[in-house]
Amino acid sequence: MNYNKKISNASGSWSYSDSRDALPFTDEDPSNTNNVLLIYGFQDDNNCNTDRSRDKGNFGGNECQYNREHTFSQSNANPPMSGNIGIRADPYNLRASDVRRNGDRGNKKLAAGSGNSGDVAGGNWFPGEEWKGDVARIMMYMYTRYGDRCIPSGNGAGPTQPSNDMLQIYLQWNVEDPVNGYEDQRNSYLEPNYGNRNPFIDNPALATIIWGGPQAEDRWGILGVSTSEVNKVRVYPNPAQDVLWVANTTSFTAISYTIFDITGKKIGQGNFNEAKNPIDVSNFNSGVYLLKLNSLDKGAIVKKVIVK
Image (cartoon, rainbow, N blue to C red; front, side):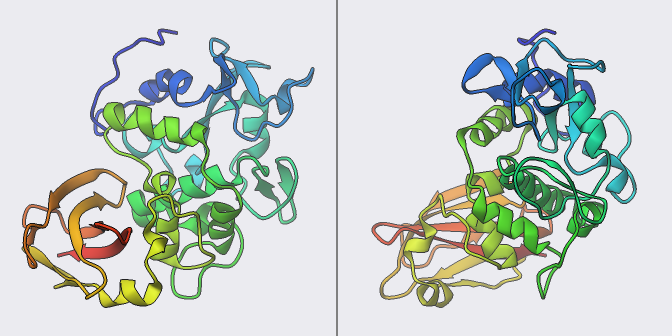
């Protein structure tokens, strides 16, 4: 395998083979750079099926080799994933996995459990304590990027939030298993090569903002602003068509902003030089965006914005 292969810098042309070639970089074991980490793995011994780490060159379809695991199973999407590019090749959904353990999971839905990965009640699958947060953030990414094709209950079991489709177990896992450096390296590699990021790795608290549930880790410092203060800062009109305006409060004044699309790609940024500066969204596609407002000394807040 050529680890130095130049991979296409466009998600629209990124192929299933590109995802294979990216695994030695995205899934590199921080403790042993000759190896990749294997999702669902937990113990390196004489049993390949439970291995947590494996030599990068040992990719294939045979016993004790690793392959590509679709964390959101191909057949659980609606319609099922197919083709060499597009949803089936999305590298944020693909992880290195022991061949047999990949088969053991199959297309079983993800569900609550404890300890190491394996089967749980109802014919479901628990990804393991080390991997449950990773898995949850992948599921959130897949839902926000592909919508009803990857509805959370299609690949997971358990109750959903009262007012939306997000599984409560994913929100719980997002809190209980925080982001680690291994996840960060995926974003760092894939943003310039694939063209976007997983925003729930950048800041797990975005899941709380969007779907509610228990408060997740805030990696942007947006929780330094009280909820009441966040609610007072208005972004209008919302939905917007051409421009957005920000109404500051006496205690929070935005000095700059960053806009992310729902896949985590940074698509705009700027500074506020006056009390009221418009944010131009006239060239944005219709959809949901995250607007991060930064203050000089009060941290930052994030607002969900709709462009029509």
